[in-house]
Image (cartoon, rainbow, N blue to C red):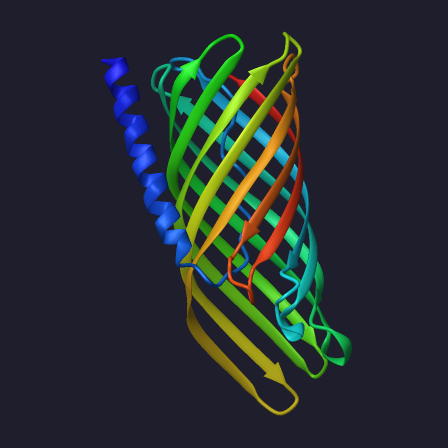
Length: 264
């Protein structure tokens, strides 16, 4: 029975990955998106509960081909938590929530201004562990992701606030390697396809206005590497995240995380 569940789950996830790739090929716009991988621990056992707490430092910048007025550079600091509950040694469910503060600049020359904001991601995932040995493990996951962003832009003679709400589907996998009883290495990759809505409020010396608009679908890809000190459950991560794919839009996010995980 377990073997059938593994095979079925594998083909379901492969099908979703293929559909997501097709969806991503049509994405030509981007929006703010910060989505760290949701895995609480590289392996799980039946009825086990896991918890991971992470602190994050990140840098985010627009594509070099983005128009000068829309270019931005940001740095940020975040805190998030992921919890997992395993039904058996093959299937588990996880959930996560976090918050990240951002600040930086937008535009160039005389039109340049400051940009500050906050993002809050929320995730829920089904995890499938088709392979688990003392040395190697593989976990695949799929589930919805929701994000809230609140940004403020202070330009010469103008003040803008923007609230964004995005939702989508994330699909990914993580491979864990135990070098010995002390050191582990995890490799992970993830694709997140999102769309949403945005409310923008503009205030200047001469006028004020509010605009509501839809955020067209865009895709974020994430991949990275964890170094884990197994006895203490401590991990140091380096993550690259890219959103958007057209020549005129897009962004890159570099994340560096320090995490502590615990099993119950």
